[in-house]
Amino acid sequence: MRFLLNLLLVIVLHAPPAIAETITEQELRAHIAVLASDEFEGRKPGTEGENKTVNYIATQWSQAGLVPGTGNQSWYAPVTLVERFPSAFNAAFAVTSDKQQRRQVIPASDIILRAKREREDILDIPVIFAGYANEKPEELRRLVSGKLALLHMRKPKGRNDLPDYITRKKQLITAGAAAVLSVVEGNVRWSRSTRFFQRSGTTLEGDQYHGNIEGLIRGDRIRKMLKKAGLHEDQFDIWQGDPDFRAMDVPVRIDLSAQTHIRKYASHNVVGKIPGSDSQSGVILFMGHWDHFGECRIADPLNPSKDRICNGAVDNASGISLMIEVSRRLAKANLSRDIYFLATTAEEMGLLGAYAFVDDVPFPLDSLIAVFNADTVALAEDGRKIAAIGMGKAGLDDEIEKVAKQENRELDRSGKSEVFIQRQDGYAFLEKGIPAYMITSAFADEVRLKAFIDGSYHDVGDELNESLLLGGAVDDANFHVALGHYFGSTATYPEKGSSDIGAN
Image (cartoon, rainbow, N blue to C red; front, side, top):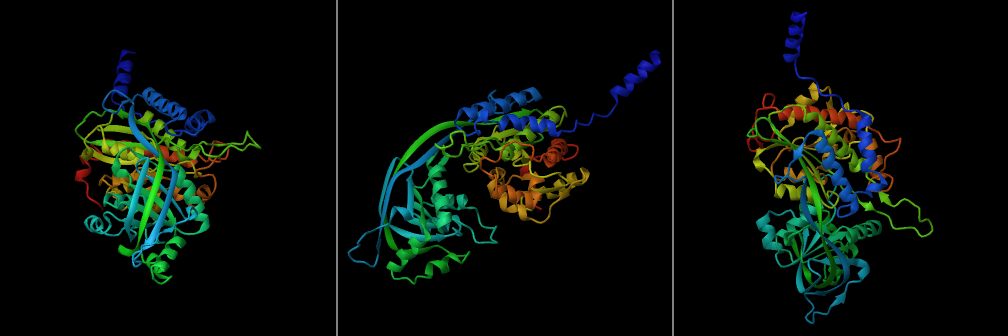
């Protein structure tokens, strides 16, 4: 009997590590049910809904075995947000060839403005049409500094190589433009853009994020201004049709005045950590945004019980639920590398939480080996086919392919999902040259993705119900566990940091 007991003990001590338990649909659904409930009020930053959300995430990570990852014994990294709402504004222009410089008022129906400070007046400044802000930084600075820059809001079709609108506007502000007016075409787009502009003026704290005055202007109003200046009425359309257009001075000068309501408030990223056995071997980061839009519809006095909360079940309670369950598995894995988990605030406002984290990381930035962003994962029936947003840009394509083969997953090679690369938190890391991917079956199912974006996306319909598809989310969650095992171990991936990784 003693021989048998000793034999059993030997077998147990020398048995290979247990394979992590498979993540289930029930586990993901349980987290989504909490995070996307009306009790969490749509998870808008700066609200009681935020307090409940970040506390839930930190509690779940603590129960999973993680420790606070901010570097100061706290789960919460403060992110100061500054909200700006247009209060009052006016604008007028004069043609430079007019010796008397007679001002013509731009109707409020054709322009909307907000300022960096509570009041800003900019008088008699020259105008330059910046097109798509294609120039190199030093050239752009020479061209636009001290001027009002007109910027295309929309990129031309097929030009995914151009930066997104927010990045292009930031480039003009950094280059010293005194004001930036984004050109909007069409009545429908104007109505939609102005509504968004009135509620979307939130940035990180710091003057570098704002032009003295920013705003929107109708394309038709620009055409009328150019016609007054003696240019052909088709000239603006010709400029707009050229994606390689270089900035050009416009023969008008403009007066702008804007009053702005400013509110500063604190939000929080949540940061957890699984310490590795070799802290010098690099860092792996899993991330996803916790925020959504809160109460996103105006109260209907005729129907006061009508749903007003954007619950964000798919976007992005699903991604946070994935991270919670992935953290549970990886916390038991005894990996070499430190594994960080980051739940970001204010992604919906322009990836603000991600940018704040990149600016103040709790570890050397060049020790970061790979970033995996989980966003909007609950759209596909299964995860046999997955899109890896960042392929061809992030430098770990061969390794991602290797893990996909090991997990019997097929990578979507169409490249269609890359149009979203600048609209997800991983982009804040890609800009720093750090390999970052958003890997999800949801973005490999083009039909369902389009139906979601055209339907309940960013609206009250994105909530937990029986039609929510979690088969793909489960497969995605288990794939992220596999990614953690592969990149978290120096035995399977020996590279030391992003500085050692070249692009494919």
